[in-house]
Image 1 (cartoon, rainbow, N blue to C red):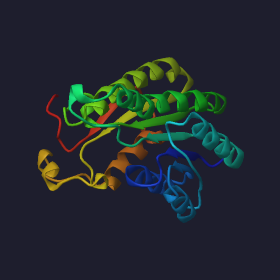
Image 2 (cartoon, rainbow, N blue to C red):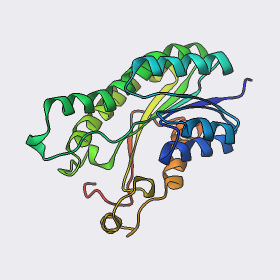
Image 3 (cartoon, helix red, strand yellow):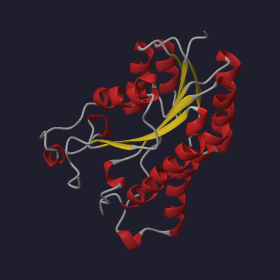
Image 4 (cartoon, one colour):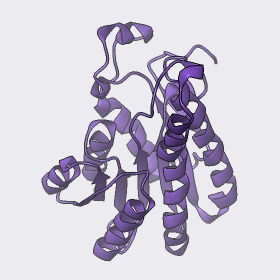
Length: 233
């Protein structure tokens, strides 16, 4: 059987990079994309491949999928990890910033699904994981656009899982809490029941679990890895 591959959108730094390292430990070949050369540096370190690009640019997504197929001939797992959208006071956020948040958060998930689903159908299965946020289900006025549009990602994830589950293609969301790779003030650590920030490597282990066959009966879920930040049960 061909060696499995993992495509990481947003794979240059933070949780994306940490997940790439974790998947490499699990024996996956890696294909990375990020806006800066950090993805290229990490790919060299991990014996993978990389292309610079932005998740919100459709041509960039197509290029990395095509490049991955050209080099590896298959895509078994995909992580979609996009940057933070515009913030602001709820009714002070401009229309163009709401549009930008939509382009940054929901559109890449839909577009990557359109690109890789035919590949996974031909292979007989695959797994897609979208990193979103704890505030998708417990909205925060600190992160209004993120809270709103990432709830939409969870909705799309459930619909996708219903549509393609019988084809052995799974999609889940990882909802991290405050993580050390986000350069947050110390007071955010105190919001966690564990009284600390998550380490990016901790989030990566959850992501890798969902990306791999270890989670073969989990799909359509939005799994919180937030250290107890959220209150609802």
